[in-house]
Image (cartoon, rainbow, N blue to C red; front, top):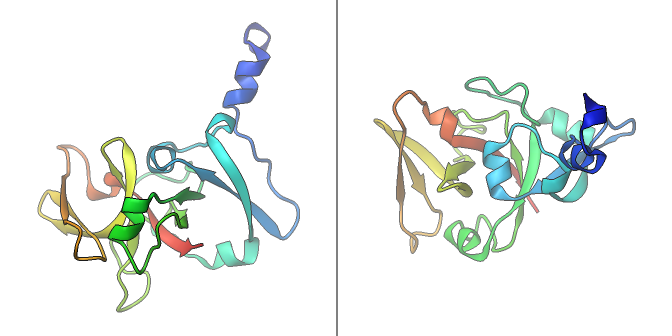
Length: 171
């Protein structure tokens, strides 16, 4: 079957990273829409590859709601200026954010500290604090000069379907 396909098209769409044999893991920088909605990341959607110590990534605990075990766990996104300012000073404009797509639970990661989440919104991804209110997600900015958004949870879906990931680290 592969003989019938254009090799350039196959290479463009293939998953690009073999397992790493050293102490570092490759983490892919992608657009927010890819981070929020694509289980696998293909070569054509990767903007950059960054390295993280495997020991650091292993210390991050998952808390998955729903079926996500086939999703590439860690990816990175770069926030735009508006996104960064809505979470200022916790997130700076243009900051690169490591997100853990195996943590989409609303349980606090650390006691007494709010989680930041990458959330699917309007075909893209926004980074906000998240709360649930009936059949809606409330997206709260850190900077109170920016509005609170209400994101309805579609019938047959759960809040976990809208949450792409918890933000694990800022660069």
